[in-house]
Image (cartoon, rainbow, N blue to C red):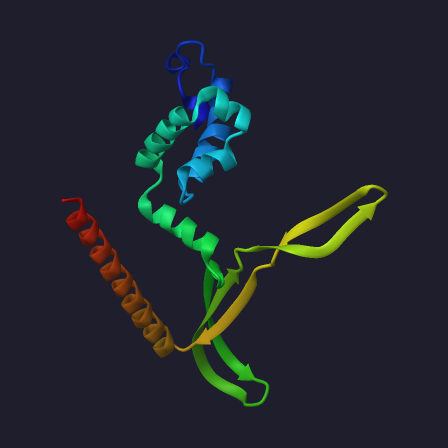
Length: 191
């Protein structure tokens, strides 16, 4: 897609290669910085200090604000902050399939019984230091590891699926109510 940009769009010595490098490095770094709760800390974490000092923090803050306006909606920032700070597990993936059970080891032959098989993959977002330490003469290295995702598989009757959907709708509605209250407080305090 990027290669489809006409050469005439690259002005003042900006080549396609330079633009591609910017997309692959600076934009990614700015997006990562944008989802930090402290933008200065995010810039310092993501942009090499030499480049940050040469270009200036004010310039990078301006770039960050422009990028946030166009590419980083508030809900993405909130989600990233939640994933970095949660003590619990985070949802990684959900898959499902419909199965018809015809036979059970203890019950024997069954009438065709359809059910849903819901698989939820979850993980801990926190990185832990591995007990694995490699040592050689004068050198010691610890390898950080991320816990492997775990999977929860539920076999659900249609009624249980309906109950789960209703519970999730209730949860969503209450989250939306809290967001409205937060938004209204922000408007009230800004006036």
